[in-house]
Length: 88
Image 1 (cartoon, helix red, strand yellow):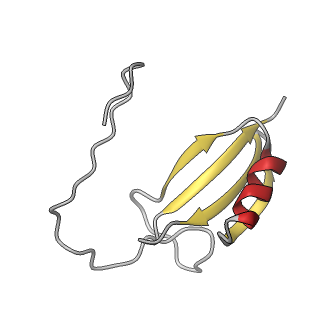
Image 2 (cartoon, rainbow, N blue to C red):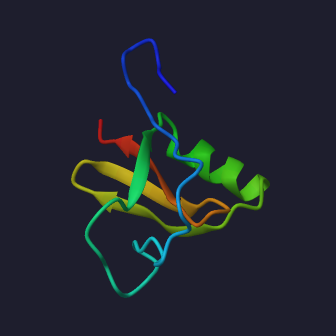
């Protein structure tokens, strides 16, 4: 998938099944490698409201970092998605 800005994301649909879970935030053991994708948002409160309306569990957050605040969810394949609102 390629965006007009040049950002390119490859989805591998014919890969072998994973042998281990993607570990981040909500699990005690952390591992190196891909952990999650982060999406920048403008209104964290609105994101939290929409996630709640859609009955999507927030696994962590909102968490306040020096760079802003984030919430984390897991999608049905257990991949982590971060929604991050940069600090003003």
